[in-house]
Image (cartoon, helix red, strand yellow):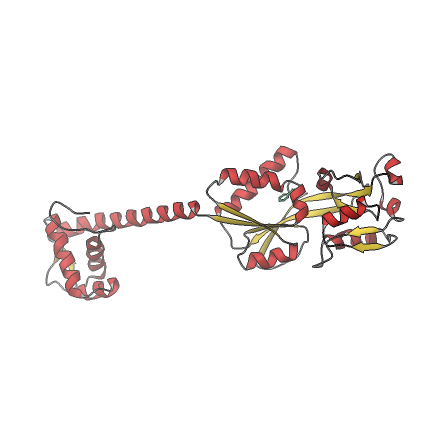
Length: 313
Ligand code: BEZ
């Protein structure tokens, strides 16, 4: 900025104001120069230029410690306020730029895609059109490592591991349903099935690794009821498990939302068992206070309200 007097204030904030405030606060040209990391001659020059610009003397020359003149005292308050405002402008601009260039990375286990994750992602993208969102399919264990390394900002998984640096929140307990091959004898049975109905069928579980996984939740369910399936077949992923069910090679237990995946050769039946549930757990770094994290949780709450789901149950 070039003023009528010909004094160049340069880009904001005016260095002359910083110099004036430093001399006034330090009560010393030497200490002010050290604080601003400049030599004393340019510091004195800047002060003189400011005094010429304003038409008043600000610091009593020759005084030790350096004292403010009467106009200097009045203008010191103004200078402090101007510098504070400039700092605030910078901070607002930085926050706006960060929000504009914002990135948010989400880790999820595949089965959450059959639940409310797509709606949550849609609403998040609508609320933050300028945030670059990345999604990564990761197992629950992989999500913890990815959170710690900063590769994701939030994770949606099913296995309740503890980690001191990671905060977890139970979003809801999703019921499991049985996936049976079309034409299976139990499809003729009225009402929900119980686990003991399924013992003659090979049980297909996923994912095979890493463990523990959703597979262990299903195995633990049988064990908790003192039951053993005819045989156990471990596969890498949900789609493989459903493919084998369609082929008539066994049955599997899947989170209820998977039922939306209407697949030829597979029929779903409800299970009458209070323990046949799989949690959906949200995780984030314990020290993350980002607006995006608050936003995604608000969106989840809104989606749950819409769907009549109670958070945490
Ligand atoms: C849900 O289906 O409830 C859900 C899935 C992923 C993220 C959040 C919620």
